[in-house]
Length: 179
Image (cartoon, rainbow, N blue to C red; front, side, top):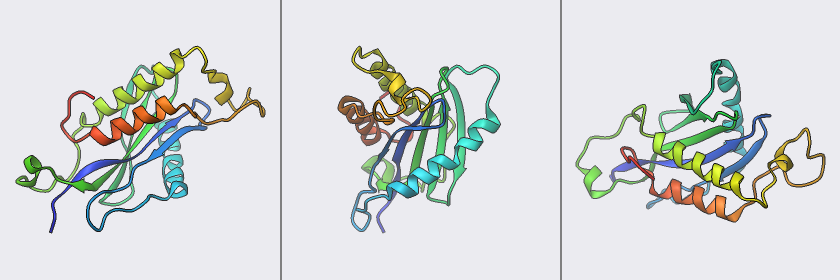
């Protein structure tokens, strides 16, 4: 049997009003694993994390790591991060998402992630979001459900942002220190 390694299954950016701003899904790879993920199913899973964010909400929020939010089963788990502007970042990890590299193949199976394994990914997603906000043509109020009222899409449609999220998901692996 082929040795498997954790990979990112989905990355979600949730607005301060608990509205989904962006959800990217990434298929599992390898023989017998090439499959598309169900967007609705992952939207529901990400949405189920919002109550956990609210329950754990600290008084001061500056790059707050929420750690494991919810484990669906032994394969899928969701981890969270809260920015200082109350934007919620959720990364869904598939523990059997891709074939293990040669360096990982000799090791025993990974049973979980360490506390800081996803920190570089969260920092990279937050940096991508900050770069998006710095774009003079990007109007964040378009994504505010209280202000938008039909003036635009409530989702982030920036191709550059989407490409950066895809890059983060492709190169992340447990133990990476920078992205």
